[in-house]
Length: 637
Image (cartoon, rainbow, N blue to C red):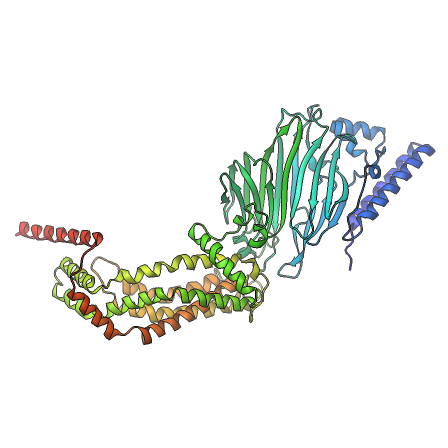
């Protein structure tokens, strides 16, 4: 059903105003000329409203549609003049009512407030939230956009308190919305919005004309922008984790305010500000000179998920503007849309840097490898299958790391009897035992570290994917098997209302359970072998005992921590560990032959082994320690 353009409050407001006008005309005994002028004004306003009510069609208005009409009586004009000075003229216009102008494009349904001249509602037409409710980024006064300025007659005024005159026109295929705060028909402050078809970026400018004698240019002029981000996801706490005020400043540097707590910053040279919600963003871009002395604040609004259910964070930005020749001119852009890499990247303003793909090498891996790879795979595969295929490809590429780890473990297993004999022989001289142990390992080309170092190569990939899946807009509301939304948790059981397990949540997710089981068996198979080959050194932690604890701790961490995370991420870890188990069995049973490894070790032992600088330094240090110990023993005797 077509959505009404004016709500009941607007209708009541118009009715009250009309009644007041009738009363004023009755009390002041208006002349026939005044009555005729009033009828003409009402007719013009009705025609303008009828034009604005047409769906998907721009309304073209002219200055004649808003001709100056004496709406206020003489007493009202005097009161307005005393309060607003030159801007009292704005109250004399028939558009000076608490009304809204509605404009639609392919992607937006926008409502502009007459008072304040800014957006009262931003509805994204192509998206819905977890509960199938349309996505609103601005609604029900959650956002405020205000300019505070001084006048030449020593007044301080706020645009949010003053009526703007709306007009809608066409510029080719683009729709132009002009909101003017007038002091006369030729002098005004204008907010100009230009909307392009199927585009989330709005060309926005703030310009004044003929106000150089009205502004007090010696008094600061400040833009104050506030917004409470509306909840859109099933888990408000999870959504809040990825909701942050992000900004670009200086030499393309991107910074953020606090992720969970309250925070504030004073920043210079700001190119854009992003009031980022998890999957949707509101971004203000400076198209000309950057903002300076910008005061930013972020307030966390989710203290209790059961109570705080409407908003995630409150963002504020306060920034000074500059006059030029006594007038105000600022060219900006407004982005209201998805926090999607491909969408943001097309504007070539660095807006995609607001997406938290990870810092340093982790972000580079995501941008250079995983985003293009997943985009390619999801182009012809269902999203769940695309995750599985990408996981298989990643594990194949990293299979050499597992091979190196298992080869190191095999060597240590073969050397264990010899190393145990050395420790038994020098049980009273631990330093000597360590020296001979290192010598045997060096000659055999085996070392505990040789198995750890290749494993470190997996950490950048692990963390990059940990950041990729929760922020991949493509996964939003895409289903796979029992998961309704791969960007949110998969719930197979909901606890009774009001019941929640601390750190776990009020539901049971299946993918984290499967991932935890797979991790347990993988660690049982790999860590068990490491425990068997890992000697306990005096003065060092019992690594075998620590590994034993990790076998149970890691799956438990997965089970609890990922219960509220994106099911796509848990699906990745589940498949990844299944593949790791398969690769391990293949390497262990079909690739690594312990007899051949032993033969290579024996050959390696016969060859002279040249120590590297680190090994030589360690050997020298141990020799010095051994000599000091002997000296101390002789002195005691």
